[in-house]
Image 1 (tube, rainbow, N blue to C red):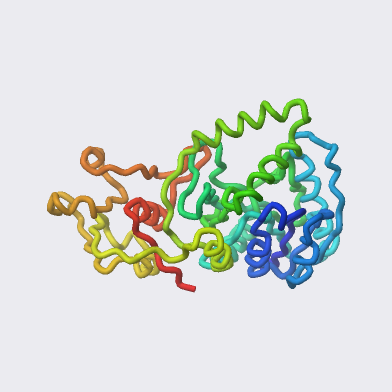
Image 2 (cartoon, rainbow, N blue to C red; image 1 turned 90 degrees about the vertical axis):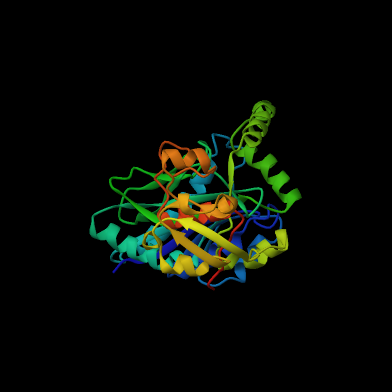
Length: 348
Protein backbone atom coordinates (compact mmCIF):
# COMPACT_ATOMS: atom_id res chain seq x y z
CA UNK A 1 0.00 0.00 0.00
CA UNK A 2 1.26 3.46 -0.95
CA UNK A 3 2.31 5.69 1.95
CA UNK A 4 1.98 9.39 1.31
CA UNK A 5 3.96 12.30 2.78
CA UNK A 6 3.51 15.98 2.09
CA UNK A 7 6.16 18.59 1.32
CA UNK A 8 5.98 22.28 0.55
CA UNK A 9 7.52 25.74 1.05
CA UNK A 10 6.30 28.95 2.64
CA UNK A 11 7.42 32.44 3.63
CA UNK A 12 5.42 35.51 4.73
CA UNK A 13 2.14 33.66 4.37
CA UNK A 14 0.23 36.23 6.42
CA UNK A 15 1.73 39.29 4.72
CA UNK A 16 0.74 38.01 1.29
CA UNK A 17 -2.56 36.48 2.48
CA UNK A 18 -1.73 32.99 1.26
CA UNK A 19 -4.32 30.31 1.96
CA UNK A 20 -1.55 28.36 3.68
CA UNK A 21 -3.62 27.11 6.64
CA UNK A 22 -6.23 25.74 4.25
CA UNK A 23 -3.56 24.24 2.00
CA UNK A 24 -1.71 22.53 4.84
CA UNK A 25 -4.99 21.32 6.32
CA UNK A 26 -6.00 19.64 3.09
CA UNK A 27 -2.53 18.14 2.68
CA UNK A 28 -2.67 16.72 6.21
CA UNK A 29 -5.93 14.97 5.30
CA UNK A 30 -4.23 12.72 2.74
CA UNK A 31 -0.65 12.58 4.07
CA UNK A 32 0.87 10.97 7.17
CA UNK A 33 3.13 13.96 7.76
CA UNK A 34 4.16 17.15 5.96
CA UNK A 35 7.67 18.58 5.62
CA UNK A 36 7.72 22.36 5.31
CA UNK A 37 10.66 24.50 4.19
CA UNK A 38 9.72 27.63 6.14
CA UNK A 39 11.58 30.77 5.13
CA UNK A 40 12.38 33.42 7.74
CA UNK A 41 9.27 35.63 7.81
CA UNK A 42 8.42 39.10 9.05
CA UNK A 43 4.73 38.63 9.80
CA UNK A 44 4.25 35.86 12.35
CA UNK A 45 3.93 33.05 9.85
CA UNK A 46 6.19 30.82 11.97
CA UNK A 47 3.85 31.17 14.96
CA UNK A 48 0.79 30.47 12.82
CA UNK A 49 2.32 27.31 11.37
CA UNK A 50 3.43 26.22 14.84
CA UNK A 51 -0.23 25.98 15.85
CA UNK A 52 -0.90 23.39 13.14
CA UNK A 53 -0.30 19.69 13.66
CA UNK A 54 1.49 17.02 11.62
CA UNK A 55 4.17 19.35 10.25
CA UNK A 56 7.95 19.10 10.50
CA UNK A 57 9.48 22.53 9.91
CA UNK A 58 12.80 23.02 8.15
CA UNK A 59 13.89 26.63 8.84
CA UNK A 60 15.45 28.30 5.79
CA UNK A 61 16.71 31.70 4.63
CA UNK A 62 15.89 32.92 1.13
CA UNK A 63 18.65 34.41 -0.99
CA UNK A 64 16.66 37.28 -2.49
CA UNK A 65 19.68 38.42 -4.52
CA UNK A 66 19.25 35.33 -6.67
CA UNK A 67 16.89 36.56 -9.40
CA UNK A 68 17.00 33.82 -12.00
CA UNK A 69 13.53 33.14 -13.26
CA UNK A 70 12.14 32.27 -9.85
CA UNK A 71 14.55 29.38 -9.26
CA UNK A 72 14.63 30.22 -5.57
CA UNK A 73 11.17 28.65 -5.41
CA UNK A 74 12.37 25.30 -6.76
CA UNK A 75 15.45 25.50 -4.52
CA UNK A 76 13.22 25.87 -1.47
CA UNK A 77 10.90 23.14 -2.69
CA UNK A 78 13.83 20.75 -3.10
CA UNK A 79 15.02 21.53 0.43
CA UNK A 80 11.71 20.16 1.72
CA UNK A 81 11.78 17.24 -0.74
CA UNK A 82 15.34 16.23 0.13
CA UNK A 83 14.54 16.44 3.84
CA UNK A 84 11.53 14.20 3.26
CA UNK A 85 13.61 11.73 1.29
CA UNK A 86 16.22 11.58 4.04
CA UNK A 87 13.63 10.92 6.74
CA UNK A 88 11.52 8.43 4.79
CA UNK A 89 14.14 6.77 2.57
CA UNK A 90 13.52 3.36 4.15
CA UNK A 91 9.73 3.63 3.95
CA UNK A 92 8.44 1.13 1.37
CA UNK A 93 6.15 2.41 -1.38
CA UNK A 94 6.62 6.02 -0.24
CA UNK A 95 5.33 8.91 -2.33
CA UNK A 96 5.55 12.65 -1.81
CA UNK A 97 2.62 15.02 -2.38
CA UNK A 98 3.44 18.66 -3.10
CA UNK A 99 1.15 21.65 -2.73
CA UNK A 100 2.04 25.31 -2.89
CA UNK A 101 0.62 27.63 -0.24
CA UNK A 102 -2.23 28.84 -2.47
CA UNK A 103 -3.31 25.34 -3.58
CA UNK A 104 -5.97 23.29 -1.78
CA UNK A 105 -7.33 19.77 -2.18
CA UNK A 106 -11.07 19.06 -2.17
CA UNK A 107 -12.33 16.46 0.29
CA UNK A 108 -14.53 14.99 -2.45
CA UNK A 109 -11.32 13.93 -4.22
CA UNK A 110 -9.51 12.28 -1.30
CA UNK A 111 -10.64 8.76 -2.18
CA UNK A 112 -9.78 9.33 -5.86
CA UNK A 113 -6.31 10.62 -4.94
CA UNK A 114 -5.56 7.53 -2.88
CA UNK A 115 -7.00 5.21 -5.52
CA UNK A 116 -5.06 6.84 -8.35
CA UNK A 117 -1.80 6.76 -6.40
CA UNK A 118 -2.26 3.03 -5.89
CA UNK A 119 -2.92 2.60 -9.62
CA UNK A 120 0.07 4.77 -10.54
CA UNK A 121 2.35 2.77 -8.26
CA UNK A 122 1.07 -0.55 -9.61
CA UNK A 123 1.57 0.61 -13.20
CA UNK A 124 5.18 1.67 -12.55
CA UNK A 125 4.57 5.42 -12.84
CA UNK A 126 6.90 7.77 -10.99
CA UNK A 127 4.66 10.85 -11.10
CA UNK A 128 0.98 11.75 -10.89
CA UNK A 129 -0.45 14.87 -12.55
CA UNK A 130 -3.68 16.44 -11.33
CA UNK A 131 -6.20 18.77 -12.93
CA UNK A 132 -6.02 22.48 -12.08
CA UNK A 133 -8.78 24.97 -11.36
CA UNK A 134 -7.37 28.51 -11.47
CA UNK A 135 -9.63 30.99 -9.71
CA UNK A 136 -9.37 34.52 -11.02
CA UNK A 137 -10.20 37.59 -8.87
CA UNK A 138 -13.16 35.80 -7.27
CA UNK A 139 -14.03 32.32 -6.06
CA UNK A 140 -16.81 32.26 -8.67
CA UNK A 141 -14.85 32.29 -11.90
CA UNK A 142 -12.05 30.26 -13.49
CA UNK A 143 -9.26 31.39 -15.80
CA UNK A 144 -8.96 29.08 -18.81
CA UNK A 145 -6.82 30.75 -21.49
CA UNK A 146 -3.58 29.30 -22.83
CA UNK A 147 -1.22 30.69 -20.21
CA UNK A 148 -2.91 28.66 -17.45
CA UNK A 149 -1.59 25.12 -17.03
CA UNK A 150 -4.42 22.54 -17.17
CA UNK A 151 -2.67 19.83 -15.19
CA UNK A 152 0.62 19.49 -13.37
CA UNK A 153 2.68 16.92 -11.48
CA UNK A 154 2.05 17.11 -7.75
CA UNK A 155 2.79 13.58 -6.52
CA UNK A 156 6.12 11.83 -7.06
CA UNK A 157 7.63 8.52 -6.12
CA UNK A 158 10.27 9.22 -3.49
CA UNK A 159 12.81 6.70 -4.78
CA UNK A 160 12.75 8.36 -8.21
CA UNK A 161 15.14 11.02 -9.56
CA UNK A 162 12.40 13.63 -9.80
CA UNK A 163 13.12 17.14 -8.53
CA UNK A 164 11.43 20.52 -8.64
CA UNK A 165 12.79 22.81 -11.36
CA UNK A 166 12.44 26.38 -12.67
CA UNK A 167 9.99 28.35 -10.56
CA UNK A 168 8.61 25.19 -8.94
CA UNK A 169 5.63 24.76 -11.23
CA UNK A 170 6.43 21.10 -11.78
CA UNK A 171 8.92 18.23 -11.48
CA UNK A 172 11.31 16.47 -13.83
CA UNK A 173 12.53 14.14 -15.26
CA UNK A 174 9.37 12.01 -15.11
CA UNK A 175 9.66 8.63 -16.79
CA UNK A 176 5.94 7.74 -16.66
CA UNK A 177 3.12 10.10 -15.66
CA UNK A 178 -0.27 8.95 -14.42
CA UNK A 179 -3.05 11.48 -15.08
CA UNK A 180 -5.66 11.82 -12.35
CA UNK A 181 -9.02 13.59 -12.51
CA UNK A 182 -8.56 14.78 -8.92
CA UNK A 183 -8.41 18.57 -8.74
CA UNK A 184 -6.00 21.15 -7.35
CA UNK A 185 -7.89 24.33 -6.42
CA UNK A 186 -5.52 27.23 -7.09
CA UNK A 187 -6.42 30.43 -5.20
CA UNK A 188 -3.32 32.51 -5.88
CA UNK A 189 -5.31 35.31 -7.50
CA UNK A 190 -8.09 35.59 -4.92
CA UNK A 191 -6.76 37.42 -1.86
CA UNK A 192 -7.27 40.45 0.29
CA UNK A 193 -6.80 43.37 -2.11
CA UNK A 194 -3.80 45.14 -0.56
CA UNK A 195 -1.97 41.86 0.16
CA UNK A 196 -2.56 40.76 -3.42
CA UNK A 197 -1.11 44.01 -4.75
CA UNK A 198 2.03 43.67 -2.60
CA UNK A 199 2.42 40.00 -3.51
CA UNK A 200 2.23 40.74 -7.25
CA UNK A 201 4.88 43.44 -6.88
CA UNK A 202 7.21 41.30 -4.80
CA UNK A 203 6.89 38.02 -6.71
CA UNK A 204 8.33 39.61 -9.86
CA UNK A 205 11.45 40.49 -7.87
CA UNK A 206 12.16 36.75 -7.64
CA UNK A 207 12.31 36.61 -11.43
CA UNK A 208 13.81 39.85 -12.73
CA UNK A 209 16.43 42.48 -11.93
CA UNK A 210 15.33 45.96 -10.82
CA UNK A 211 16.13 47.39 -14.24
CA UNK A 212 13.79 44.89 -15.96
CA UNK A 213 10.91 45.08 -13.48
CA UNK A 214 8.95 47.90 -15.21
CA UNK A 215 8.88 45.92 -18.47
CA UNK A 216 7.49 42.81 -16.83
CA UNK A 217 5.04 44.74 -14.66
CA UNK A 218 3.49 46.14 -17.85
CA UNK A 219 3.49 42.68 -19.37
CA UNK A 220 1.62 41.30 -16.34
CA UNK A 221 -1.03 43.99 -16.68
CA UNK A 222 -1.53 43.07 -20.34
CA UNK A 223 -1.92 39.40 -19.48
CA UNK A 224 -4.37 40.24 -16.70
CA UNK A 225 -6.47 42.34 -19.07
CA UNK A 226 -6.94 39.51 -21.57
CA UNK A 227 -7.60 36.73 -19.10
CA UNK A 228 -10.50 34.60 -20.32
CA UNK A 229 -12.81 33.46 -17.54
CA UNK A 230 -15.90 31.28 -17.15
CA UNK A 231 -18.36 31.06 -14.27
CA UNK A 232 -17.92 28.46 -11.52
CA UNK A 233 -20.63 27.79 -8.93
CA UNK A 234 -19.45 24.33 -8.00
CA UNK A 235 -18.34 23.46 -4.50
CA UNK A 236 -15.06 24.50 -2.86
CA UNK A 237 -12.96 22.53 -0.37
CA UNK A 238 -14.46 22.63 3.13
CA UNK A 239 -11.14 24.06 4.36
CA UNK A 240 -11.91 27.24 2.39
CA UNK A 241 -15.32 28.01 3.89
CA UNK A 242 -14.29 30.61 6.49
CA UNK A 243 -11.85 32.26 4.09
CA UNK A 244 -14.36 32.54 1.23
CA UNK A 245 -17.01 33.96 3.55
CA UNK A 246 -14.45 36.46 4.91
CA UNK A 247 -13.38 37.63 1.46
CA UNK A 248 -16.68 37.44 -0.44
CA UNK A 249 -19.47 36.66 2.02
CA UNK A 250 -20.38 33.75 -0.21
CA UNK A 251 -20.66 30.00 0.23
CA UNK A 252 -23.88 28.39 -1.05
CA UNK A 253 -25.63 29.83 -4.17
CA UNK A 254 -29.37 30.44 -4.13
CA UNK A 255 -31.65 27.62 -5.21
CA UNK A 256 -33.24 27.96 -8.65
CA UNK A 257 -36.71 26.79 -9.67
CA UNK A 258 -36.58 24.68 -12.86
CA UNK A 259 -34.14 23.60 -15.57
CA UNK A 260 -34.07 21.26 -18.56
CA UNK A 261 -30.98 19.11 -19.15
CA UNK A 262 -30.76 17.68 -22.66
CA UNK A 263 -28.66 14.61 -21.94
CA UNK A 264 -28.79 11.08 -20.65
CA UNK A 265 -28.72 11.28 -16.83
CA UNK A 266 -26.69 8.04 -16.78
CA UNK A 267 -23.69 10.06 -18.04
CA UNK A 268 -23.44 11.84 -14.69
CA UNK A 269 -22.95 10.62 -11.14
CA UNK A 270 -26.00 10.44 -8.88
CA UNK A 271 -23.94 12.32 -6.30
CA UNK A 272 -23.54 15.32 -8.59
CA UNK A 273 -27.21 15.30 -9.60
CA UNK A 274 -28.25 15.28 -5.93
CA UNK A 275 -26.17 18.43 -5.35
CA UNK A 276 -27.75 20.57 -8.08
CA UNK A 277 -29.45 23.53 -6.42
CA UNK A 278 -32.69 23.50 -8.37
CA UNK A 279 -36.19 22.51 -7.33
CA UNK A 280 -37.08 20.64 -10.51
CA UNK A 281 -34.86 18.99 -13.13
CA UNK A 282 -36.36 17.72 -16.36
CA UNK A 283 -34.13 15.40 -18.38
CA UNK A 284 -34.80 15.08 -22.10
CA UNK A 285 -33.10 13.38 -25.03
CA UNK A 286 -34.46 15.83 -27.62
CA UNK A 287 -34.12 19.54 -26.75
CA UNK A 288 -36.27 20.49 -29.77
CA UNK A 289 -39.31 19.28 -27.83
CA UNK A 290 -38.73 21.95 -25.18
CA UNK A 291 -40.95 25.03 -25.70
CA UNK A 292 -39.02 27.97 -27.15
CA UNK A 293 -40.03 30.20 -24.22
CA UNK A 294 -38.17 27.78 -21.88
CA UNK A 295 -34.88 27.76 -23.78
CA UNK A 296 -33.27 30.17 -21.32
CA UNK A 297 -33.48 27.29 -18.83
CA UNK A 298 -32.06 24.63 -21.16
CA UNK A 299 -28.63 23.07 -20.59
CA UNK A 300 -27.05 20.97 -23.34
CA UNK A 301 -23.76 19.49 -22.07
CA UNK A 302 -22.80 18.03 -25.48
CA UNK A 303 -24.51 20.13 -28.18
CA UNK A 304 -24.45 19.10 -31.82
CA UNK A 305 -23.36 21.57 -34.51
CA UNK A 306 -26.97 22.41 -35.30
CA UNK A 307 -27.85 22.83 -31.63
CA UNK A 308 -24.97 25.25 -31.18
CA UNK A 309 -26.68 27.61 -33.62
CA UNK A 310 -29.64 27.97 -31.25
CA UNK A 311 -27.94 27.19 -27.95
CA UNK A 312 -25.39 29.78 -26.87
CA UNK A 313 -22.66 28.69 -24.47
CA UNK A 314 -19.15 29.95 -23.73
CA UNK A 315 -18.09 26.73 -22.03
CA UNK A 316 -15.44 24.83 -24.04
CA UNK A 317 -14.89 21.10 -23.64
CA UNK A 318 -11.51 21.76 -22.04
CA UNK A 319 -9.11 24.56 -21.11
CA UNK A 320 -7.47 26.46 -23.97
CA UNK A 321 -3.99 25.01 -23.52
CA UNK A 322 -2.92 22.44 -26.12
CA UNK A 323 -1.95 20.20 -23.21
CA UNK A 324 -5.45 20.23 -21.72
CA UNK A 325 -7.45 17.04 -21.37
CA UNK A 326 -11.25 17.16 -21.87
CA UNK A 327 -13.19 17.85 -18.69
CA UNK A 328 -14.95 14.81 -17.19
CA UNK A 329 -18.76 14.79 -17.72
CA UNK A 330 -19.56 15.75 -14.12
CA UNK A 331 -17.30 18.78 -14.23
CA UNK A 332 -18.50 19.84 -17.67
CA UNK A 333 -22.09 19.78 -16.40
CA UNK A 334 -21.01 21.77 -13.34
CA UNK A 335 -19.64 24.48 -15.63
CA UNK A 336 -22.73 24.46 -17.84
CA UNK A 337 -24.91 24.83 -14.74
CA UNK A 338 -22.70 27.63 -13.44
CA UNK A 339 -23.11 29.51 -16.71
CA UNK A 340 -26.85 29.56 -16.04
CA UNK A 341 -26.33 30.75 -12.47
CA UNK A 342 -27.02 27.34 -10.96
CA UNK A 343 -24.75 26.09 -8.19
CA UNK A 344 -24.10 22.93 -6.24
CA UNK A 345 -24.81 22.14 -2.62
CA UNK A 346 -21.71 21.18 -0.59
CA UNK A 347 -22.09 17.78 0.99
CA UNK A 348 -19.83 18.53 3.97
